[in-house]
Image 1 (cartoon, rainbow, N blue to C red):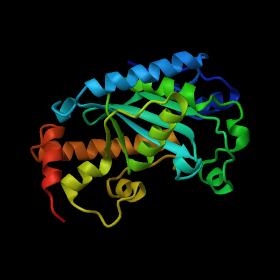
Image 2 (tube, rainbow, N blue to C red):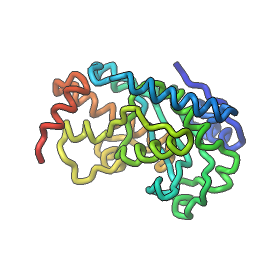
Image 3 (tube, rainbow, N blue to C red):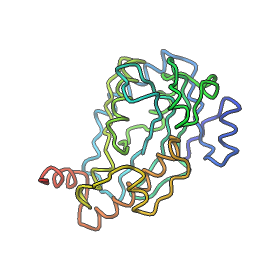
Length: 247
């Protein structure tokens, strides 16, 4: 099912016109108490659902990437954009994507503006974090999340949920390196750029949350197919084998 999120302002219309998927998030429900209630209920539902025994060929996940003002959410750094794309097995569901800018409460360092292209002017009319998190997790539902070097996403989502709704992050979040390590062992360079180059994946616009999420999804799909070809049936098999590895 395609997610249709209506853009709110001229900036998001420009994103659409430049060729990004039209499933851009408005990120606004207009009702902060209902957003908080949804996020609290979402946590309970996420805790109930387990995907560990689902066959890898049909496993549904959402691959996510965040752009942030820095690397330390507990020292005040904030999320400034979320990009995500859904997958079924190794198939990237490009039409089922999510993107939203977020208006931060703190200044964006100059080097982050240069890196991401996200300036105070670009984010001036963007929705606030609570509304975007509510829209994002409505899109995710109970599906597990995937990210590259996922500690960054985990820490910022944890901090954001707690800050906006006093809710703990409960979704399963897997790292692409889980499958990379399973199939290819330890990597001298495990950066997204290096792994994408090694696997023939082009990142259309680096440090753009949606483009980085799409590249990460393609990488996850390649290594999921490798894992299946090696005989791994589900996440239980994967976790068991990785846990037994000694380096």
